[in-house]
Image 1: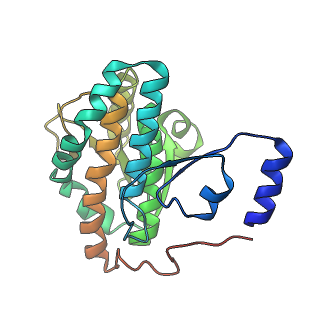
Image 2 (image 1 turned 120 degrees about the vertical axis):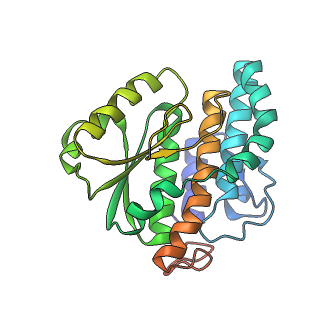
Length: 240
């Protein structure tokens, strides 16, 4: 939507608007009442990564303040060090199958559903690989008929109450012959994608996408794509 049209719509609704932005001089920031800067620094990647993580961290911080959740606040304080550790995790177990695939699925639940969606987007943007995100609940309907050894699946396991059901679902997918790669730190399986020890479920999900970004760089190299210059993309996308 053009900026002028968006401004008219906001004015007509008499809404108080809040923008979470990395660039405080952006058109969106100019038309909003409250601007919350992420202060992530220049986003050098066309397929934005650090600004995504910074946005998640800011939303978690706001949630912690609103809910007076001291546990979440403490987890956010630990997040920078944990993100650095997540960058060093080796998800190479997925490289072989995913690099040869034409299409795959990413699966999440609860805090990790947004992570599955971001992962699917990055696979499209940087590796030109069709990837479709699902919650574990919706995948068990029609999409489960896609399961085969030739159709890779990346499962982002949450560390909250949804984890038990997700583990059962992972076992069911393996029994059907799925090419499943699952984040876990308690299973010594060949398809395991290592993760940090659980800390706080929402903050743990942010660490998963950091580890995934490291995988994408390696995957793009295998597929011969340039993560710094994805085709047909540019820093600013204008819509009409």
